Length: 314
Image 1: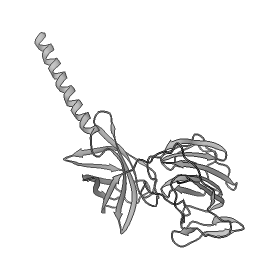
Image 2: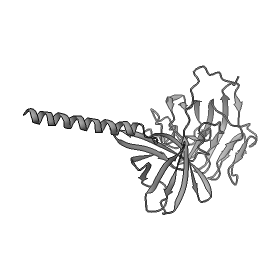
Image 3: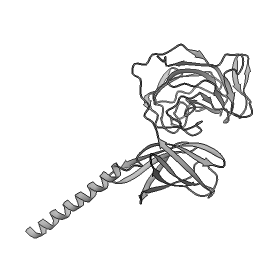
Image 4: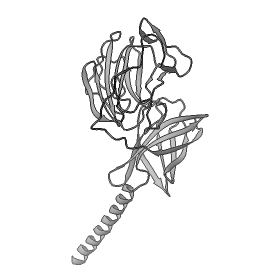
């Protein structure tokens, strides 16, 4: 009996050491973290985002954001011989297969390849996403009216322009190009007033990278991909959308990577952290200032006020 107990004790000790070693090695995995990606695909540099985290004792899981669509869960990131790989189902992509990724660390840069849903292979690189500091003593400057009520001065269309100004209203009467502010910002407070017709869809990208969704969703349950959500990441605490055709308003505060959103007078997201870029971002350079981007490629939208109050710099 004593011999059996001793053998059992030794076995448990060995198992404990093995488990501890596995956990420790995974916790120290150089792949764990948030990564700002660029995928080189068909002559374009597509901004994307990857997060790898430890789940339980030894399993690596994650999230991935492609050039469009929402953040997608990664069931498992498999690691072998200093490389990792994972596969995720398609979302809005055409084709019949999963997207397959493999990567390795070269210095401080992740490099790898992606097999797209059509079977074509492309390369990508990623750097660690920066930590954006929250300024608890922030001082706000003077408000800036980014839309002057007369013309498109201060804005540029990303392609053939369908945007017009009609009786003091900025309008995209049909799906077409997105609209980007010429000025760039870091931390700011933003007030926008907008309306859309029934069934329409738009959004406003903070720093050109984080979309706050605008969509005809009155009466639906709140979702990160519906009205007031930070697309695919943050879900509002209630659905605050009015009926299509009514003027509505967002008041958004962005400080570091923390955001608060008031929609139609209701606080729907309060001081929440945006994990990374959302699909459709201009780029994945999270540490840099960026413009406002108004989505114009999903349906008609109108704005009558766009006022930004930037952080006052010393």
